[in-house]
Image (cartoon, rainbow over all chains, first blue to last red; front, top):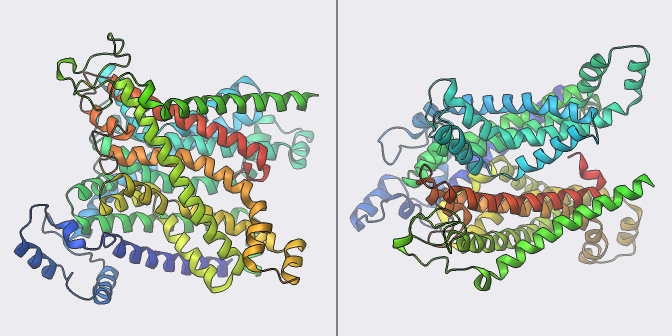
Length: 309
Length: 278
């Protein structure tokens, strides 16, 4: 077990380092990062000066070395627009992002698991059909359109909820539903199929035969064992939610990382874009690490296989 | 007997979803002959007309362009991009997965690190950044989406190849000294093709939503070209007064991706029962 965790930890560090490299090269994809960052109507002198100031006139390998060394110390350079450290601006946005991400994941789990279990019990009956059909719908609706329609209905038409911004609980409702709907559908379907597998198992029959209440059999015995795929898909959905936040935060004017990325791209403020993307990738890698470890703990088979090798 | 009816019902459904999709593809490809107006022709005297206005079934937009025609032309762009991107990323992803799984060793380790890195960035964030850096154009959006989505195929194919390599008939091929490309193309590929098709069919829907998202944020297809995503972002400004500008293009995206996903799901059930859980 310890060996497995260490191995995964090392892998995560390598992947994070490679992500940093990817972020370095990403802004250089178009050939000249300077033209990407200066205003469209910048003069030639300004461009030359900017190039020198940002160190873009060094050889690529020197630039890369400087970038990595600075990044290790948490320094990604200054924001092009505001003369403040880019990582500071990004870190100020993280709490808002986390609040939205965690609420969305919780909402999707609260919707998905009971519905998935219920669907599995009622397999093939109308309830199950309705759940299955609505989950296919939820997967096919792009989140920006869902967000717009929720605003149209709840804010413009009914005037119940604010159209955007961050404030009380009311501000959290529409963005977290928008962000969580897709994941809820995916988690629900996995819960359903995993529960169906479990309900056919011998130990469930034994539990019933020894006279346990149906409630206990389903929620305690079967669901506990059905959790492994549910944990895996939830981990994967966190990545989806980080991505979806980009659009949801833009629509609802939510002051998180996603909106910062979109705004900074529009303002050509690429140091900020670099940090934000890197931070997102790191958060995602760490979540994957935690999920893998949880997975190893909940699933003895995996543990045996990996640490025994 | 019951399973027989089950099968019919299932295939009926497949038939239905397929027919709807074919109809959408037909309408989209016949857009120049079917759509009532030129999708980019503005008529400022008829701006923001509500749906069911005479001659404009879906109404008109802020420049007086016919919304129905724009939605039909939008389907053309979405379908084209969805299919082209999946062909490109599916091809390269499968190729990389094949090489990685077949040869193993250092190549495999390097390739899989690339896959890990690509999958560490949420799809839409990666795509948006690449799109912004490359600059908005039709060609760049295709490159962007392909670069952001090949890893799924690579990982899938590599896993399947690793499993297949242990099979006796592949071992036999190796023993009699068939060239590698021949084993891969003639003996391994046909066995993994089904899984690739299943994933690819679901990816078409994801790519369509991806294109719409990037265009919605303003870094994809640029106005006045009628892409569903950019239509939504233009219409968003008028949401309080002209709901139809955000409702109809969105319904277009939902209908198209819904039927693609339904078809993909059914294909998965029929072709590849193994994949059902994941």
